Image (cartoon, rainbow, N blue to C red; front, side, top):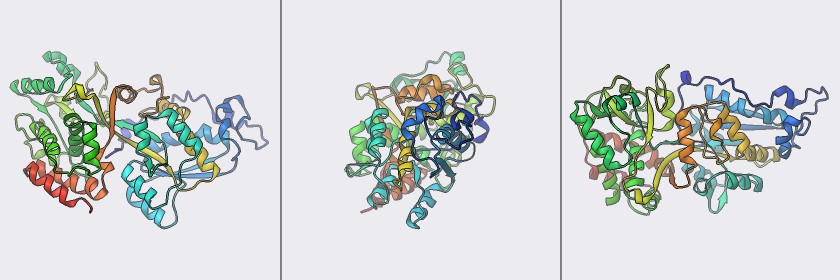
Length: 449
């Protein structure tokens, strides 16, 4: 899955609104009703979006509750300075309801779509509007090409990325590592050797949890995808995701078995929970928490897991928990990074819709949202200084690392029947004892013809 929600308790509404663009300043408060760009110095950054005063743009996404509050706060200055009102709706049933809205003729003006596969479906059906030249130029200036490719269908570009996450992380306890003299591994072999050392000390080195309600299994698919990038390389990863090699190709089986050497080894898992099969019934939210009690020492999970730790947990390199980059298997194949994010696609092409879409691709939008806290983007104009959370800083550094080989969450790129269906379910069966061969054959046979 590309995007997971952040728990509310961790989302403190930052008061840093160093967004020096206050509503009062931007609206001018002149009393003459003129709220268009250029009415005050504070609004100068929004001049390029002027001329649509009094219009409204609707946005629909899966981002809700406190995160939605932060989103709406982030674009308030844009609204006040341009006179464009953004009507935002976040839904926990976004993926199911968006097609209903679109097919029913009630599409939002803009949607934040976290699945390139769903984006392609709408594009192929002729439902999406091609991004304007301004939006495309802004996106090309601010995002790496591979991110733009995920929003390009049939040579047409449909929308820039916005928020992002990095999945290639392993959470650990810096305190325990320092106490035991363990070093953060920088290669796969070092990570394996460390796992053996920890197991020999009588501690389960790994904890894991893949339960996630209707989406149970996705954390295991992330494991497979991360290792596919490391084991077979980005080109083979692309072939696998696009089904130009079968799902049960030997290269895929090799990656699954490499993951199995960790997740299916009773000496390695499942610290704090039980045996190997306990992975299937342990929620991903709770999966890493035994690290705080030294019942396990490593948990592979994305950057957004920073907000799953109990209130009061110090997330920092010298804190209670932190994360390190999941090492490459063969450094000669580059620095693979698995991640996800959402894309701002439009179902309408009115001028005000295009202006909002262009603004969301800008560095101003990225930095304004980042200053509010708990947010990451692959936007190369995002300044690290504006990212407060230390793990988010690390994620941004990785996303902006030009040596990194980024690939999007594979299950989000595959047809939904596989990516959000048989692949998820197959991983549950695999954890519960089915062989790699049997599971991969089942998934391959489910691929839409």
